[in-house]
Image (cartoon, rainbow, N blue to C red; front, side, top):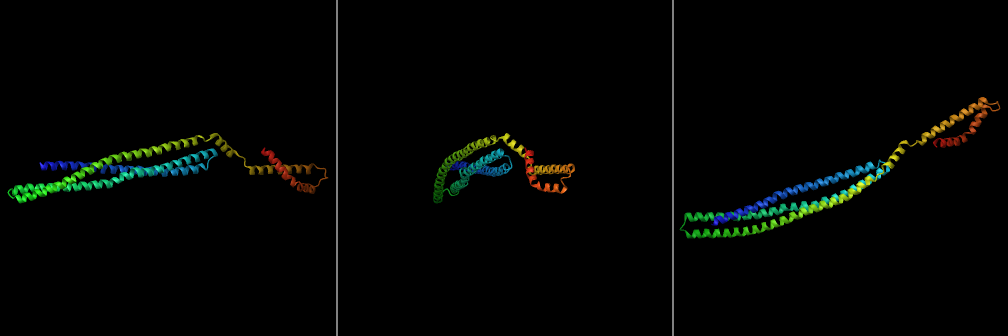
Length: 289
C-alpha cells in the first residue's frame, strides 16, 4: 500500500517535471524567435534610413516639383522609422525580456523538483530498508521499530516537499498562463500601434508622390535643355557687326570722289569705335528678339 502511494507520488512529480520542461523548451524557443524578429525589425529600420538618405541625395539633382515630392516622401519615410524604433524598444521590453525571465523562473522550479525527488528517493530507500529488515530479522523489534521511525520521518519530509512542489507548480502554471496572455497581447498591441501609424505615414507619403506636377517639371526640363547660351550668341552678334562695318567702309573707299582719303577713312573708323559698341548691343538685342 505504501509503495503504491509512493509510486503515485512519483508519477505526479514526473508530470510536474514534464510541465516545467515543456515551458523551458518552448519559452526558450519563443524568446529566441521573438529576439530574432526584433533584430530583423531593427535591421529593416537601418536599411530604411539608408533609403531616406539616398532619396534625399537623388532629390537634390532633380527638377523642382519632383525634388519637393521626393523630399517630402523621404521626410515621411524617416518619420516612419522613428515609429519603427519605438516598436523595437517596446517589443524588447514587453515581449523578449518577460520571456527571457522565464529562464530564471524555470531554474527555480527545477530546484524544487530536485528537492522533491531527493525526498522521494529517501522515502523509497527507507521503505526498502524496512522491508529488508523485516525479512532478515523479523523478530528484532528494536531494529524494525527504528527502521519504521526513519521511514515515517522520510515519508513526512517527502509529503511536505510534495505539497510545496504541487502548490509551487500550481502557481507556476497560473502565472505562466497569465504571462502568455500578457506577452502576446502586448505583442499584438505594439504591432497594431506601429501599423496604424505606418498607414497614416504611408498615406501622406503616397499623396506627396501623387502631388508631383509632371507637366511643370517637364517644361522646366525642356527650357533647361534648349536654353540659349547668351555669351556664345553675343560673340556671334559682335563678329557679324564688325564684318558688316568693314564691308561698308571698303565700299566707300572704292566708290568715293577722291575727296575722302584713306587716312580720313581710318580716322573715321577710329572715331566710330565708340559707336560700334552701341551698334553691337542694338544688333544683339534685335538678334536675340
